[in-house]
Image (cartoon, rainbow, N blue to C red; front, side, top):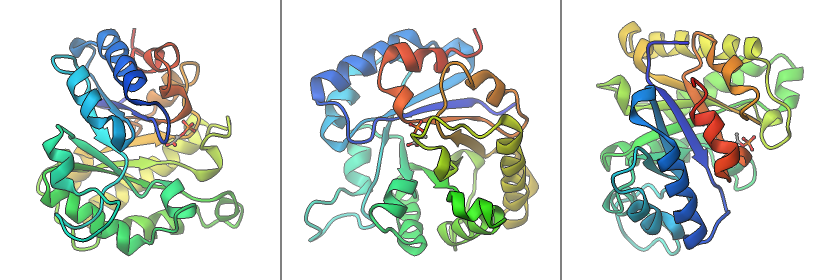
Length: 253
Ligand code: PEP
């Protein structure tokens, strides 16, 4: 466990219509409390952002988005910008998720532009990185992650460690029920923090939160959070009901 404030983030992906999303957000908010030293974030689909933003008024839950387009406005049919998200009360935006990299074909440079746009729009990027099973089997895990981070943060200044969150999500552990062992996850998180110290400086590296994602649930969150460089979780499947997500949020109780 670290001195950084833990962040438990729910990525709802392409699930939940507005009423269900608002209801779940309230359930999560009512079940969370400010005094556990755990920050909670939910990232509904774009269609539910406004309803969830309303629903969590006064509750200890932050709003996240799952994507943005790297321009403030313009002729980009179907896209959503950082200022539009900020206008809805969004604080965090998930970028570089493996589904966008591998299903939608997003490149490191496109992701980098999104990170820059998020910062310019006053949002905190949650930049995801992670290796495929074949990368791990070929002994390429750290090379892959380092490239994703180097490219994704290219020429992005970091004045304050709270302006960036990273998420390590081994692709073979996402939605598969296979979780990286806490030791394996810690090894990568530790290397990421070392990389951050070299890329920025030691103080910033110490403050940046690095989340783990990949089949996190109530039964494995404590062991993961006991590791020195794991500062929270990015949760997919288990964030879709209060019953599954609240034990993660309340892992300290
Ligand atoms: C994710 O999509 O970021 C994720 C970690 O999903 P799951 O928790 O379902 O593995």
